[in-house]
Image 1: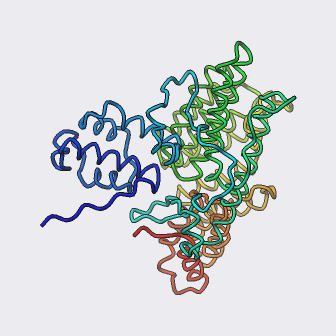
Image 2: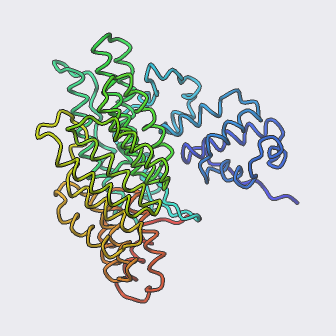
Length: 471
């Protein structure tokens, strides 16, 4: 007797919604997974995980699946909306069918979801979940369930996101104020909030601004429209960064690529160079050294002399070299970045990368030294950089502490690693930063041989109490 198919929960997340839609199309066509395999050549177990919402599908799979079941692009459109961050309510209400594909209009239709509502019992509270393949993903649990007892062990991570969800979203049109000034003020608030609260509640707010700007562009002309496109590009780049910190690197790629495309229309060469550098940073996080180096070198060639953008590009190129194991090239590139930073004009004419300084180069150098196996020097570099961080860089401090902990364990200093890991965990729990928590899950594995050491046991117990596990 065949096993009963697992009951689907399409409203659990956008990814679950997409998976349920895919299986509905397949069932309608009378195709089994094995029969589908003959048409699309993808492993049935992979397809099954995608249909259950347990794994994000690749664009190639969705395209092939859509064609095989005759969905006429419906599944491809849903997948694009899921990547862009559209919520389940918008997907299930037929939102996707109404979406436009004209990139020039800049409409992602995310702003159709109302913002600034009071937190209800059905509002999602995000929890980090450690999956069976070692990834950290964030799952949304309705507040009704949370308040009823689910996630009690992780109560510390619910406070900040819940508080952020209650913030009212500023309206784009404000009386007696230039919309561009207002948009810039909103962007600054989002950047500051990211450092304190993490990205999860900020992603839909950034996307709402992107969509609202698209509406404003439709009624503007000439210079005003170009300025609006520039603002839209800034929000797209920021949205890419939020997804990157949240651990959704494919969505980060989507928004960063869109920002790069729009930057050309905005005719802002500095912005284009900065986004290229960010693409290199993202490639480094995805452990793609070839792209990290190539894109950074392109940014380096395009950067205007006398701006800090060239130093940023050289810094990310250096990490790409380190990922390739090219120690000499990496250290030379870091030295070049420092020369470029100090060689820039005193009054730089670009507003991009104002955070770039010697401490940032130091912390990136420490990360690369760790990748190269020089863990003791890496730990020392992280400690120096952490001490130099301004007070407001809460989330970044957590990232650096987690990486410092990994460097300590690499040099065999288990107690220091666990102590730094505990500090990082407190910040990772409050901000929901997947960069922190993913680093700490690796640290947990690396500390296994020291698990009888009291501080190591404290760290591991605390991590397990904060991070849900896939069932």
